[in-house]
Length: 106
Image (cartoon, rainbow, N blue to C red; front, side):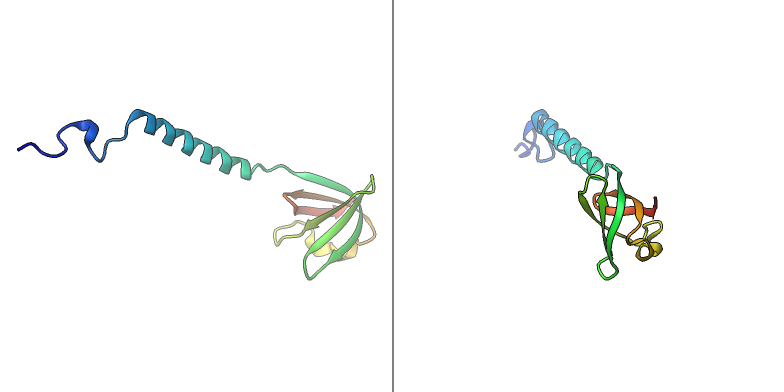
């Protein structure tokens, strides 16, 4: 009596070529998507610091064009300790995805 999986194409461990290609495409897409999520695009807002809420760590910067940007400070934000002192002054805030990386007097 022949073994149930004598022919390679019927083996449970065998993946056919189209399936391998689909798997490769799926993994590549996942890897590229993950890389894009951490794109590192830095946005710089320069203007007057309209407000800062110490409880939520959110600040509002009014740009030269009059548009307001709300940005959140994080524990790693450079210059975050001086945010309250900068309210009403011209500032430069660098951020990634709405999270400030630095804040300083302009």
